[in-house]
Length: 276
Image: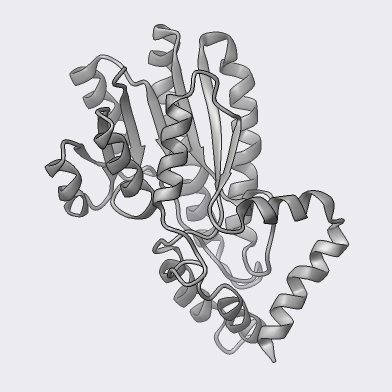
């Protein structure tokens, strides 16, 4: 059955790939992002574009209202909008840290709150939250980003229990290294924050260590995540978590079995090699 699906962060990367995949399957897909001009290709193939900044309540409320007015239901919400603030805890301003949580957690949460009443009424629905292997692991200079993804994992688990009796399913997607704009957004601000400070050398090392993780040489296409999301939506009994993309399953397996100190040594060893 064709479903009504809302995807945030649909102007690029995982969000756009997922929108294309679901539109091609015949679903009614509402593509939400701040940059509507970057979603014309999705409109051309049958998608519906909505201007939405998830940190603006009016945008979020108007977007949900538009879908319900036009379709009378929302069957699946893919919470994909997000970005990364990288830099030492000491260097990142509290304003930037709050903005990170506003986008990656609080904006997502408000949107979810708005679709839940309709899903409860129809006794069905699927909330899919795009986390990261960064929701289970950690890396130097990523404290604020990792904090949001660790929070999203726990938040999603609680939501799954709360909504189970209303026929609503909750799944978490944990991508590995995926070709996106992630590195472009992360690297320069991190260098700017650390310039001339005690963490500058580490910032350059982190960039070297993650080189290729987002530009294609050591990563996989966002299409793999799009197919994973499609699989979850199509399933009558979806998994609570899906790990996909290069190094995702191996990294999570290693984190599960390594002690904290062993994982600390692994992470710092990678950085120290690059800092030489």
